[in-house]
Amino acid sequence: MMNLWWILGGALLLLVTRKAGAKTLIREFEGLSLDPYKDPAGILHVGYGHRLATGDPVNQITKAQAEQMLNNDVLLAAACVQRNVVYSLNNRQKDALTSFVFNVGCGAFASSTLLKYLNAGDVQRAADEFSRWTKAGGKDLPGLVTRRAREREIFLS
Image (tube, rainbow, N blue to C red; front, side, top):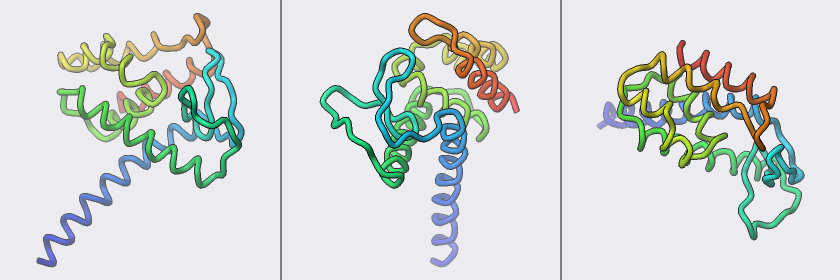
């Protein structure tokens, strides 16, 4: 019984650790804003890049609320990766893709050429697709160029 507890506890710790890697990336790229803001495409966000839906309250939040939003958003992004990727990923690839999905959305990822190449086992071509996702509002954004280069680097490591 004790061994089973250690195994289950270890699996839970591994899951939390994996999510922590993706959260670290997202924090780095998104920064923290306790006040709602519009991104370059005009979409309203708060916290660590949490997208506000139409009808959501547009109020200042606390750091604890931002962390809870981030936890929920990362779980959704990680679930999207798990649901759509059939290729066997290493942990760094999961982190990079979770960060990517957090930023572009599950629908965009699910229909992407990046995912098609990855599921076909062509990791290099999939990695090369990151650089195609650098626009917002039709314009290349330096922050997205940097983010995609870093996600690609992590994905290939």
